[in-house]
Image (cartoon, rainbow, N blue to C red; front, side):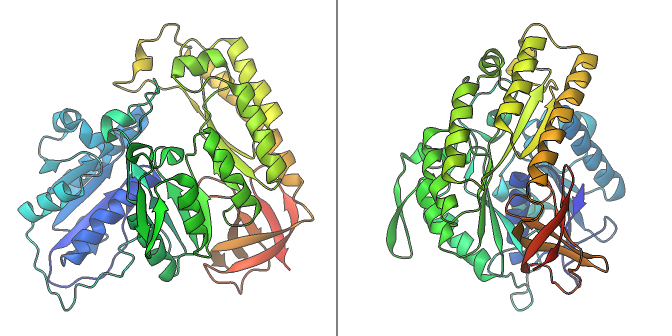
Length: 445
């Protein structure tokens, strides 16, 4: 659970804001906060200082639902005036059953409803001479990187997922609007843009790749054209949640040319065709292996991150072994793994042959053992090489930075042992001297 920072305040309407969930939810929080700040509300860091608290929730898995309900309960107990939004807000009955006293419940990306609820219970006292908002809006990330959401919703119907029921089908943002936001962020000093959505590869499908306009020239609402335009900003651009559609092949040369970070976050989920079919995912792991090999031939420095689920209903030992074999063959750089967890409303709950919890635990441990070895071997290959990094933190022991292979908060770090004189947001070149299964250590060149 994270509170927004204290922006300073006087005798004006004061808002507390708790933001939970994924980077997509974080962008929703930033949009709501930007609008509230533009209307003269001040943002405060404690329940005691706040006249009203907004809680942006997550509701993807049971653990996230519990965390969200606990956060709402804490806000109600500590403050009393609470507006709830976000993914769990799509299940208002669940929230009302446990916390009937909340003032308002809205679903995800319901910016106007949230602001309207704040207006209703805490009318703004706007002073246009003091209520100033920077051009890039209010951001919850550090100044040197930012998330850029390009669409909302998803057209897939994966049996383990309820995102479409909460966020709806795919709706792509107009490309001119996306690029305007990206340029404002770059102009404000952002050094890295993390492109996010539920399905980044599908950008523009819903508009039939409609031609938009940016800076007086036509640009198609399509992933490749978006990436080409973003590359012209001269900052790092990192792609997340990229389904391996054929047109992703067109992006790899841009990475090889240094126009995009050589990094793909591809949610593969499994490798057994039988389990992928039960998940309603593309069911050919063999094709994925061929694609990965082809991508690496074009861009040898490509980092591939993925996530997987073990213990999905019906998963046999043979299915799980196929997944381990895939890991050995694919040698992915960054991998996350989760035990299957039933989610209320998910179609997978009706599938036969649930996997016992003890078996899930054992398979998760085996999976992570295999991937830890692969990760350690991949990182060891970087010892003796020079890598470019972006600095996230600096203290008396040096700097903590990230390379092109490292997304913030989910991947590893590069520890610059002589980086005490660096500044957050600096770029540097580092000679790697040591590696483990997650991180790298080195000195400035």
